[in-house]
Image (cartoon, each protein chain N blue to C red):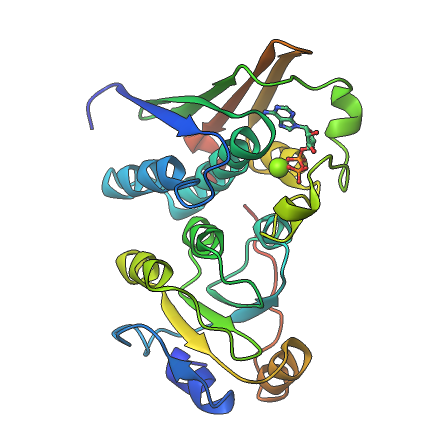
Length: 118
Length: 145
Ligand SMILES: Nc1ncnc2c1ncn2[C@@H]1O[C@H](COP(=O)(O)OP(=O)(O)O)[C@@H](O)[C@H]1O
Ligand SMILES: [Mg+2]
């Protein structure tokens, strides 16, 4: 599933320039605890979260995450958007809640994905 | 690459805007040097967790990184409160982080376990009232063949 498709499924607003929307996403992870995200390195995942502080982007950067979806219509500040842009990470904002947003992606075939061997 | 590359960073305590910058910088350098993506990710995550710990728990500190073709050594040193019970601190879920830190998405008590998981060697020297030094080693050999 591409970032563009994720955006459609979640009726999400694009907060970054959208240059990387054709990147394919193979797995997903929904969490508000960054260390939980950092515990499970997955293959090219999307991160769904309700947090909008800069450490969400830093966490994504370390994990090679290319797309972050902010749930419940949250919109981060301009600094965070700039940081994501510099890291080549696309930001989406959906009005769905976490449970529904994850459920929608799952039911469209985006599964959790295996945890690759580090 | 040259035989050895040394990097040094000052990490400010309580600064959640810039926390993670040095780990991001190291990650970019490793990418440019052409290391294996898994090695880069393991190294970046371990360093980032350590960097965050210095920001949250220790009032900041320093990071020294030594990159060679075979391995990456990271030394994170602080003059914070130290860790009273290291065995307890290493357990998954153990955290003394405040609620305000939790609201930022940290304080799950997974940082030290994550560092252990992603590093090939992790050494922690700590003294209560004096500070903590965390040494992280990642080896190229783990991500070959
Ligand atoms: N550099 C440090 N200085 C002082 N205490 C630390 C340091 N790093 C870790 N700790 C202690 O070890 C605990 C566990 O650390 P960690 O596994 O990273 O979990 P978390 O950071 O989520 O609390 C922390 O809650 C803290 O009490
Ligand atoms: Mg921690």
